[in-house]
Image (cartoon, rainbow, N blue to C red; front, side):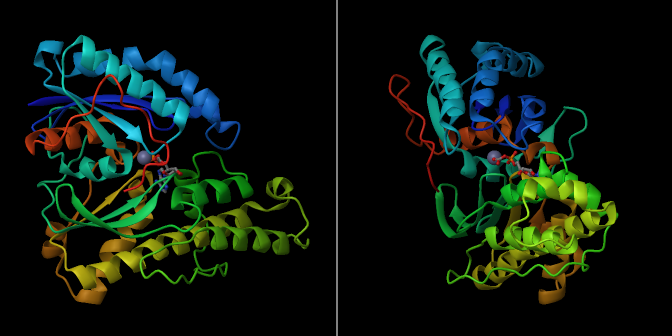
Length: 364
Ligand code: KG4
Ligand code: ZN
């Protein structure tokens, strides 16, 4: 069974072919990231226009890299939410048109659920991919951390899951992007903060963690505002000093300390809750998903926290905690195709190619 996955929820136009829910045959991605960098974040109109230009070449590339013609494709899976309305629309309309003209079943995929399925890919002949040795097993605990989402989800089985907690305000990636902007670091914030953090002291700045009523909920808006106040204080100004003028006044050492301290606290916030959920739900596997899952700091802190709290041996930890290639953590079509494969295998309902519409606010 081969599924073509299409993803256009934000600034990546992506398509990929996946076989039987575990084998990655191709993964084509065109990003409009460079066009957004000068604005410090994604501009929805620019993203939508880029999708229109890229969608056909990206789909063609996914098919040709996989060595497939349309006869080899059994179904199409497409992200229909959550995401930017104009961006989602391009992918959904392309998928609907292809499903009708090529006579393929169509699966509508929740983007956030899709992120988790990137971890089910275990084989590929594509170069430069490091995939987990085995698929995750249920019950499965998933920490989904990206520019648009921060949530902790417990999967009893495929399709059968429960949302344990989510962010009450900003997503963790969004907070990285905003702190990067405050300190004059380029977009996207996560990787650039990680780079700058290497020069800094992660305990130099006091950044409080938010306390919330929901046991597994997160908040990143408070820590982000704490960074703003701290930066104003560091340069001897009060809270009326405009944030856009901060980068010019902060020294490189101050920027590095802010980056390192914020990164430590933001990652600790999601690691603490994952460890609590691990204790309560005793999952067989733990996966991390979304753009922030490529964070080296997360990949350092999470195993360390599990090891020290539960005294798990390294070999056992490697079986529980699975990481995929960073290229499959940020938005891609492969994760969408993989979930499409499982939906097909499990005889889940297909979408109507004449009526499927995007749902920008879709939740899990
Ligand atoms: O999953 P994704 O590509 O798009 C969304 O669905 O949001 O995630 C993008 C986010 C951005 O906020 C970016 O700053 C963050 O992922 N990110 C990282 C890293 N790479 C990307 N955050 C921390 N460390 C990284 N290495
Ligand atoms: Zn995403």
